[in-house]
Amino acid sequence: MKTTLKSVVLGSALLGVTASSLLAHRAWILPSTSILSGESPWVCFDAAISNDLFFPNHHAMGTEAIKVTSPSGKEVEKQFEKDGHIRSSFEIQLEEKGTYLISRHRLGYFASWQEDGEQQRWRGDLEEFKSEGLAEKEGIQLIESDSKTVTYVTNGAPDIKALEPTGKGLEIKFDESHPNDLFTGEEVAFTFLLDGQPAEDVEVFIVKGNDRFRDTGNEIEGTTTSEGKFTFTVEEAGRYWITASSSVDAGEYEGAPKQRRSSYTATVEVLPL
Amino acid sequence: MKNTLLFSLSGMAVSLAGDYELSIEIPSLDVSEYHRPYVAAWIEDDSRDHVMDLALWYEMAKKNGHGEKWLKDIRKWWRVSGRSLEFPVEGFSGPTQPPGTHTVSLKDYLAKLPAAPDKVYKLYVEASREVGGREMLAIPFTWDGETLTVKADEPVQGKNELGEISVQPSQS
Image (cartoon, rainbow over all chains, first blue to last red):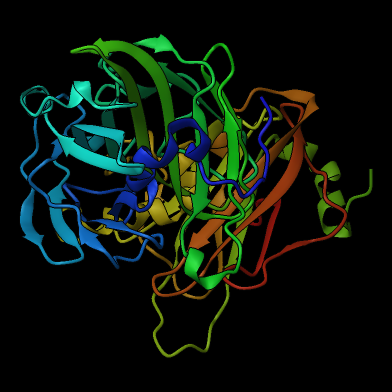
């Protein structure tokens, strides 16, 4: 698996204008630290949709849809929850040892078509799509967008019980590298799954945080192998934003061609060795 | 293989039958806010697998395990050993130490270290200081079951958080 350093915006050619609004901003959940020790330590999170990583400058993410799963699979209560204008925040206490998953899952529908020579855009749910008769529009294209935004924190030794794939949408199976055990100069290998199966040609895009303090993104970009594998190595310690997406034809809805776009976005820390 | 004069003494120390000690120098630092460093020492084999812990100095007397909160800052040790341990650990842990040279007897540890004259083990010392820095040093050595031979050309000397670290036949 090779990675390239092109500065191409992910997926723009794949999905056309309609989906570009989905990609214009970056969603992230950022832990204050991802590796903890001691008795029931606390960790806090910022969550936002912004342009710069990891600086809130556009929209708060909203804490309501963010779910925290403990190593044993329990839902953990978020505390000190706050939704501001440009940033959401909360804290959790890690009473168990192992790896916690912090995740937000969204499912939405987007459509585009031509009308009087102009591109029209729409978002809503499938019922509305049907009742508004959008399937009849010229050049109609319907996109189902299934997106996950996640991060992980570990108290003590990392494990993967809370990170087991659900078999739905785009996910990572952590069978080689653990997201809370990443170090500079060491190869990271992730296996991407779509609906539980290894997913080929998933576009993966990795950016280091603090991008507003440099002129170029220095992104890592590439696609997964036929086994769904993506490997990369980073030389600089820091926080990284990883986003992966795939787009597949998903038949028709009410006669309109439907595409399914799945994305998985994660924030990880890479420590200096 | 060259050894320093100090370390070549170990070759004469066969009769001591594994009675060695580790010296760790904690430098005295002129800083506005000083806290004694957390220090860990351990041995890895030539596959870079952790073999055994030798020392852990941290604020173990703090109530409710609050001193354990910063153990993850001994970053490399936390990865290879600490994160899998239950605290407090018996045997090799102790309180933080002031600036100066401190010794750790290796006798009991070497007794458990597999003899492997062709293998180069590494003895690591890592220090992490609150509101300060972090530094890690390593002493490569071989162990034939009786004699420990250091495989370093020069004394192993830190720059920031550690002074000199060395292994020699026990002085006491």
